[in-house]
Image (tube, rainbow, N blue to C red; front, side, top):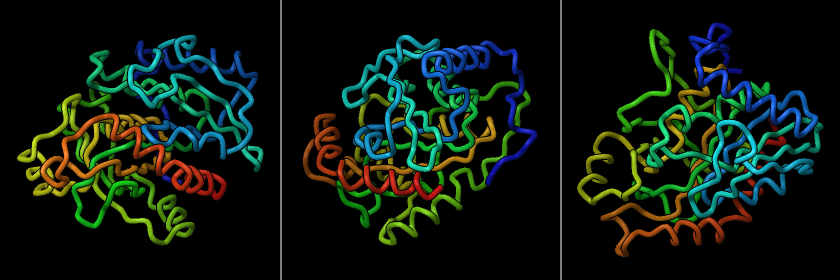
Length: 278
């Protein structure tokens, strides 16, 4: 497992952001009666149905009732935090209340779910999203493993002299497990743009030139915070559309939601099978 003991704690455990995560974890433990969760998932656009296949949902909490979380502002995100008992007896914490960087709440709010997962005891962080495809090998409705990312938000969830190695940030071990379940899975580099506007065709050409295969408005900042907290990170995207200048029609969020509904059964089963194999 990709863990570095020196990185289990953030640079300042007394930092307000870390204290907020500890308060959130305490509130989740009190509401669920579960002292420790083994796995955490942030379910992005299109991935929500996976929670039903992971195991038995024993508790579901409105995110607004947990310190540091907010009701979801994005269609397709349920705005809840759930505790699930898997068939193997593990506990999965499902965060359905992702805060995006473009919401203007600050980077600590964006990664609050990841830090809360670590404070709840999770060892593995699974990050999912709906995104645009740049690679011509991809098509709408296709799940793609994230092999690396480009953080174009011009910020970091880390502060001070907190130097974190991001080599192999996205777990090769779990990617191999995923390919053992579905050998048709492809990999790609994810580009996090700040949003909320979609990219121009010229920007998409620039992203392709620097090595991006996927583009979206989440995930990279969360992955950095997860690595800093010592979590093993797995990322998987659903290509909901081809990016601007590649597909002929205009981009819109309704398209993202519909693509998630159409692909939902397949990608949900895939994610549940990956979790069962961990």
